[in-house]
View 1 (tube, rainbow, N blue to C red):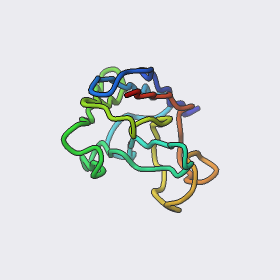
View 2 (view 1 turned 30 degrees about the vertical axis):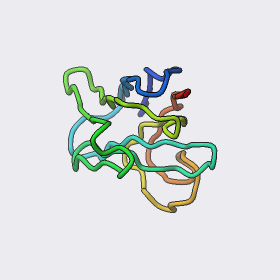
View 3 (view 1 turned 45 degrees about the vertical axis):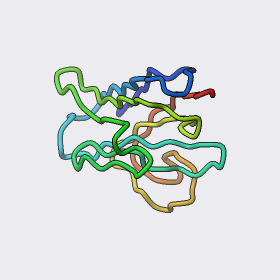
View 4 (view 1 turned 135 degrees about the vertical axis):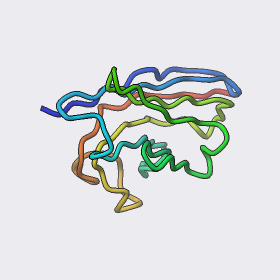
Length: 125
């Protein structure tokens, strides 16, 4: 059974930092599977934040977020620095998911692939 489990969310003030973790089980943690971080904010659209193997970052994440992995722990990370209030969202890790349809919510039923349960990030001013 494929499982993805996020952790590390929480409440921080603007300017603060958080590190999200996504631990994977049930498949080999390698480049055979795409791995990404998505987020879903109040508008309910699922936004691709970063992709592991391509080192893609959204415009809003560039320069502030860093994606990384620990193969020995089958874990992907998202280090988020200089957090802004607009970063407030539920953050999901996903494997083998589609970036389409762009205006859909996050989750397997909309984007396919495998998803974690999400971790809430709240950034206050």
